Length: 536
Image (cartoon, rainbow, N blue to C red; front, side, top):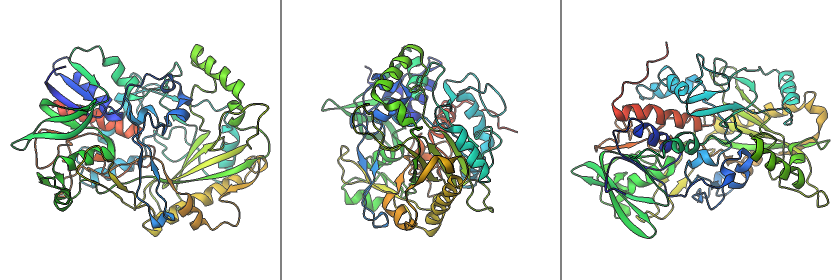
């Protein structure tokens, strides 16, 4: 392994794998990609339904948790984050959505020049190999495979009919012109029935390049500077500290928790907070770690009258056959996601974009493999009610100057009445849908929150996060922004951040697609390549 590289990328997650591919593709620049976790060589990372075993698995997770919050009945929430090649793209639910075009126009309005929807759409197209083929909204030959979940075994049709009966529109393409309504789910799964993480789609095809080095089980501990210029990083591997240098750029792609943590450990952050922990202040940047945005959610559930849910497929003998079928053919019940469909809706007619996302799941949330002669689990239809544009903002701070200590995560959810009201509106929409045939006749009652329940108490006691953190190193042209619009850290040179932390606000959908887009566009900015032409 060399002591110097042109680029050093910290974090081989959704963004880092994209950067490693793009920055090394012309063969001129040497690239080091370091990852605190290990390789994604477990077969469960290939099988789409394997995420039920890998998500929040301590072998592949950072093990974070939020601070207890009185607004959540004193609860601390699990904060899963992928710690493996591919990061969260290797352990997430694979849902592919971009959000509303207005989400990116909002970025531009917040000072992120060059990041409007017209600017970023060409990069969404570049990264995609969509089952729809190439067109105005989609790419046909990009690295990232996007397919549609087959819905025959997932109750998609009855859900679609009840959604329509409740007065909600249908969308042929939530990532196209109609970004509101009900649609079957699209996922990052390839034509062979394998998860298309960024490790699989971007990194693996590049591993034979002589100037790309990937180092796993290596945790960055601080950024090295000389005269205000980032010249490399220090990392810990197998108990030893090592320094490596970057000739051009150090790029942080650790995500919305780890990137601000590493900046603060390296002296870039709120001066009083750094001083409190004995860290010399290099740049007083009060907004490092602030502006943490997350999508809060609650799950509703309904008891099914008949054993028609996906729980049937989890009977041990059927599951074993499904695994074998997937391994041999890439098809079957375990070869894709199990989402019945997605509904993007507005709880108030005056809104210009959806504020709630409903994700329909034809299975109980605690479903497990079961044996034909063992105790039986009841059949349940579940619905995720996700708020898309929360007003609440949290923060990430240090617990100490020890880089191995987990950061303090204050989600600060439900800090405004509007956030409560949006989620209430989502719950009301779900109830309206389940009052319509055929779902009305397929369920015997509402399990959670249950008729007569105090909705606000239910929200406080059951709210979770969708694991879409963003915004803690936001870009913008205002003085308080941590980064400029080319993702360079203000106050120093040679240092950039490329991950969800750069987003001024969280997009109104699952954010993995947006993170990959950010990395695609960043790869051009970093190399000094003219951005793709804006959409007209």
